Image 1: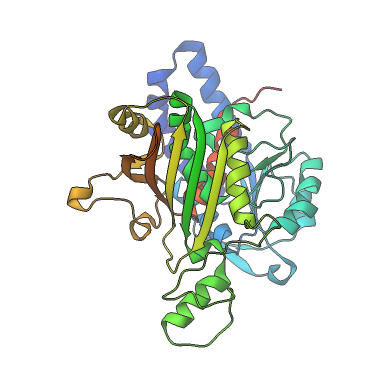
Image 2: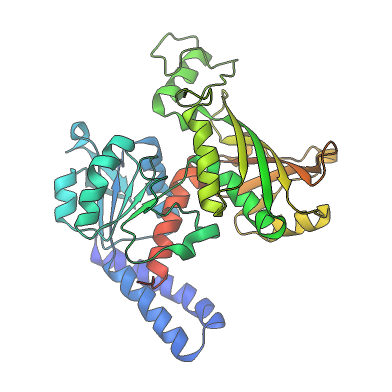
Length: 373
């Protein structure tokens, strides 16, 4: 990175945020915290593995928007992409391979290159002392690997965690909305139906929808047409009749919320939209709740935006979540057929909070906190 540009950006960041930090931290606490953050910013080296993919490109965008300027940025991709270039903070950078990236010893490597790549390469990066934040499903249910949504459970991270798993996109938006309610009332059971964007499948699915919408025959990402259709099939089918995407929602929710007793029943549906994933969620609590208190809890939760004025046609929709980091919650109402049950409609951009933003937030947490041993 150009040293002059980096120094200017760093100074601007310090000027803007130094007084704000001082509002909350006084004396020696302020000084030690400030020097810790400054030291880490100055020395941070960052790699993004899968930098040319849908999520990889979104990670670069989020890093730019958040004015994160690593001292060294290393874009990594597959063999066929090595030698090509990508743009980051206005600079054209060459794509490199894994061996070269490991040799350069980044502090953090954000992976978004699929489970096979993560299984093969994440341990090699970790063995070199590099902290891996992995977007795939490869490590999520490993008992030794933390599964992190920063607003919920980043505090469990320690220095020994060299591989950190980013949850499934549908799981992230659901648990972010449910976590404050679980802490207050205790969740007994969740029934969720998802309406998932084609962007969650990848670029081939995006092209299939675009082709079908324009009357063009092309490569099929799905077994069926997706335009003017919905497909109750996400991932691959298992012996129990559920799909792999549905089981991710079940297993990951329990792990993130730290409660193996929560019952989760999921149905995943793919729909012909680009903007984000939507979820109709019915949640049963152990304890009675007050609807006004539920709204207050959600309104005060970090990362949640309430859109719940149905009489004026205000409710979450994927069209308006596109490009945003928040999780939108609406249609909040009591289930009148069962005690202690609540209905919610939850929407979020699956490429942002569902993947790229959550991974970058984990990286920011690592940089901004002195983790325990």
